[in-house]
Image (tube, rainbow, N blue to C red; front, side, top):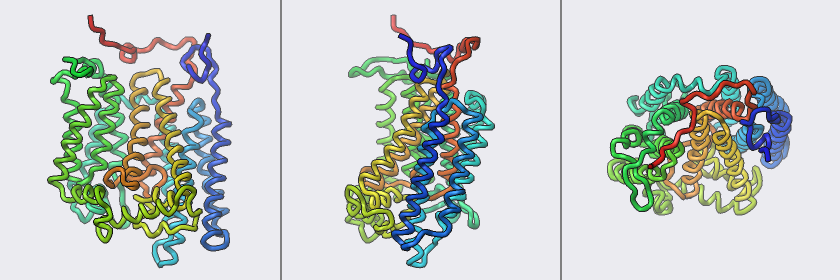
Length: 467
């Protein structure tokens, strides 16, 4: 029995559907939900629809329509669910930020965050289009792996060496702030490092997959092969020490360890990674005051409810107030949580849309990650497999860390919720991430040419066999 075109797009002569019509219909649905959510917020809070709503609807429709046309023309076989999932997440984020703007207007606070966020969305879509037009073959990225690694390390290091007045926000040195402009370079460093990790692990996977001895059912790597994971571990420690940020440290190290596991299929690497990070976390707790405060607040937020734990406690109260179905858009008090537009936007969604709405948002992330992992499974080349897996896991890992911090599962970190939270750096960088995923997806789903050249030796699967 021959596999269907959707399950095996690598088969020669199969006619994989492009599904661009499906993508367009889903984008229209995402725009509709975005506009309706904005309308509900306006009516609930102000008893009238904002006169800017029509202009907003036209602008957001033009953005997603333009992105769709570019995908239709330059990545016609890409997965049809990736872009609509991003569009709906961005739309829900804009609606919630607009709702918090209206709450801030009543107390005399800033009321233009939604407009600024829409500007960042426009820039993000522009970068999305630029990446798709520039990167016609994802394998080209592997040629610049070491250059991108250097760029990623520099982007991570810049905030650490800058004065605290320029780089520090809420105790973590993650930013570059000059005048009214601010950027979080670590968001772009994440993508650079993932590309480097994929290229490096493709070259070294055979060596890293070798085992020295078997202990408790696990095949442990040779001591001489521990170098890469130790380097990544040292990098994560440096991030914690010089930037006082547990979240970015956990993000970078976690991505590398998981990509290493995907490349070698050795579960022992996961255990080694968990052990190394646990050791560094204990060290950070003892040495770095900012990390110690975050962990103490996580263990007992109500003991610090009038100080450093105020945000955590208010977020938990908001989630509790929302219950199963929420108070309704515009009917809650998410503004009672400090910086709800960025770090705690998932708490605001949980209050007004309830557990049901928050889980629905997490399902959107799940769709995005699942389609990325599916792309990793079906793409033909080894570099594309690792790159797609790393990008998809980066989204999943970042969501887990930030939502876990808001709900009390993990200590709170300085990461932002991808596509949903207020902030330009994360939003624009993640648009570039999705553009690369769509490029890989197009290559994965594109039918192979009957006269295609045989795969290069470097892309051929290899396996170490014991005799």
